[in-house]
Length: 243
Image (tube, rainbow, N blue to C red; front, top):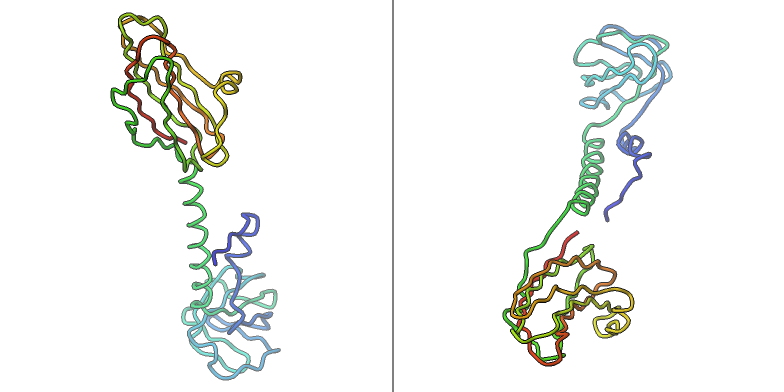
């Protein structure tokens, strides 16, 4: 299971400790390469190859590997830069445990940031030719149905129409929405809502228009209508999704 952490909690998460093998306390005294806590009664060398960090007071921020320990004194593998004193506090931690937790959390964070980055990245799909020199009968129409549009913000519809030399009206591109891929807006209501574009018209001419269709549902029908009641119109069409 991937756990996502709010950013305000990130610092606390990244610095969390695996409780096994940890200890902390206050420094009673120290030398150039030791730290003594008179309140402790550790087993001999139980902290070998773990780490000690000065978390507060004199020498704060220093981390040293523990070479050996007695019942109350840690001997570090390299000298302190600033020797701790009785104002200092410390913690003991096992690197393997902390790095395992840290790498796990960073991996989860990377997944989250990658998902957000990809979701926000502008994207245009490859154009698909849906119609190629398709003849629409006088007063007829043809549908191009698109589904699986979740995650996209718009469809680009590119429509080319070639009119008969005797035609008196052009072509209309309507976009109809559906909640389930079966029940689409009626053309009359789409027209009333202004969900259409008319190509310009000139008898015998070829006209092409690129139309940006906003995506409101997962299923959309691009309907190309021949407005001429007497002559067929030849159309080609391409679509591509974008976000």
